[in-house]
Length: 493
Image (cartoon, rainbow, N blue to C red; front, top):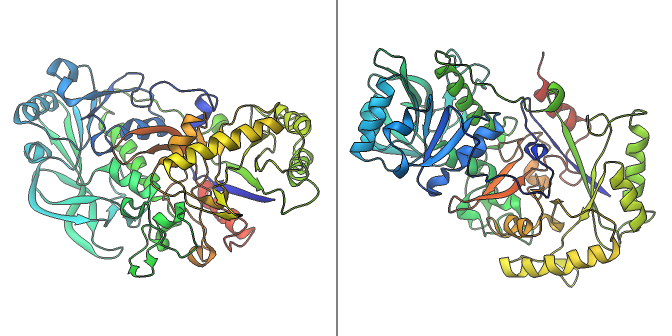
């Protein structure tokens, strides 16, 4: 039985704990309201992903509005306004400037020319694609952010400082600094107004870092046969050698997480003179890290009932009288084929004790894994879920999934079909193969955070991406890998 795990870094939210998996949440494109406003233009440029970023960073006090609906009266209800990468007319720019002059805190992303003066920068018209940035740890917003360069994805403006100051610098490589800022901050007027500016679009950077290179979404790049999640990160493809999408010398750093925590620091620091903005901690009970254990039980490869053996091992390792709800017990998930030796009564009994038993969906022809399309995957789920519940009629509805052979043939069909089948968390993004991993503990998607998938048109998909960072088939050394990840997550304190 192949049990997979994914370690979480110091500040992690297992966001699906907010509501039971399999039960639809409130609209993921909107927040509950409060002093923070996100301004978008529909789904353009992943603008609504800022809602996902704020939720994950514990800010439960925001709303999302389309720029066409925002008025000066709207702005006056908020302390902090985050403007996604959108076009801003001169009239809208003037409205924002008046609000900032009155004490508002504005955060811009890849700003249009109409907001350059308000940001205190001079745009050169040149850009830098898929580079690096170095946060200035001497600034309050840079506190506790990694003190080495990290990658961003997308395109950054090369702008000169005017009346703004630099909080982070752009690098053209991991070691080569440019003369241009990556993030700036400007004070405006006499009422405490401030403007922070990301020279790139933060949401785009985080989505691309987490989900891979969109240009490689349907490519088989690593020579391993079918299109997998890892192909979207693998650079050294035959006939198309390119740098890896995530610099493996930086894989120890959850680079996407660091970028959104920098945004969280900015929000907190900029608004400190108006009011404290409470944040939920990432874990219950103040835990600083968590390890989620899952396994693939392929049935015909094993004898003796691997799922039962593993679950019994976890029961024996759990403290007597432990509480599953309080995270005191050792528990895990088993994704199984219908030929598993596990029986329906056993599966139901284990679920009653806090384990999960789910389907290991397999896109196969003649015993070999094959790529899927949206239509073929839809049909596959129809057939295989029916067969699963024919055998396991007492098992709860499916809520999480890992595809067999980690097949992920395009950008988002997998997540869309999962959602249509009530599945709310996917673990198919998988740090593999061994010759690429090279026994390097880390976060190949730049993240240890379960967060929703985003489609290429910017639509949020209400399925969480939870990356499998540790496997038993990636040439990773144990206990070195798990101990390294947990040591980094927990830190010295």
